[in-house]
Image (cartoon, rainbow, N blue to C red; front, side, top):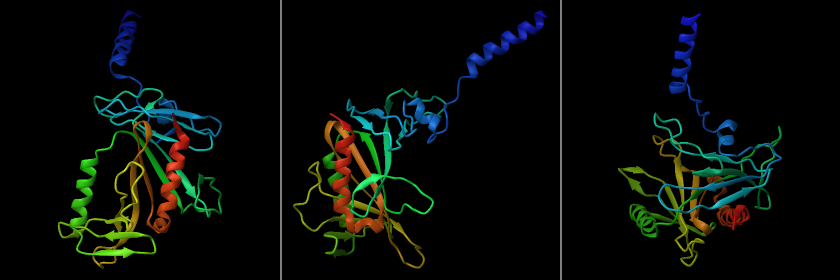
Length: 246
């Protein structure tokens, strides 16, 4: 009996050292719940965004009909970062661009395929104007030609890096059109299509702006929605303003 108790005591001691509760997998309800986010269609979710560089802490509030994904990095490392309830390094949502070019909550049904989706990723951070302008200017210099997409109101650049097409980059034809943060409007699209055939075209596009209270906003959409880039941009600003707690 004594030997059994000794084995049990040793086992409990080892478990205290090595059997700590494992962090759930990322992008799962259990992972979100550790942050205090529950997507049950009934609960209003609030999250404060943080980073490791400055003290920006924008707070966001999402209505129940909008599922929210949250993220804290390095939670599964050997020396893991601890998840703190109510805090996250990123919060993201997916919305649908309706026929009126308004962003609305996605309501999936069997006969409704969501092609016109816009993902919005919120982070905490302040703009680095010099770095952004230098990066964009360098890419534009590496484009062998410029195409004026007058139907979109954009200039299209195709920078070549290392002998290969790097991306499709777009800036407004109207030089006075600036992003809400004062920076030059810039939309960058990944390269899609087969490189061997040379049939390459824009695939997935993204842009970014810095908003109030240290809120950084990245929004991502399919290249087929590029004709509506201005509507998407305005709608993302509207939504950001709606969820930001000021």
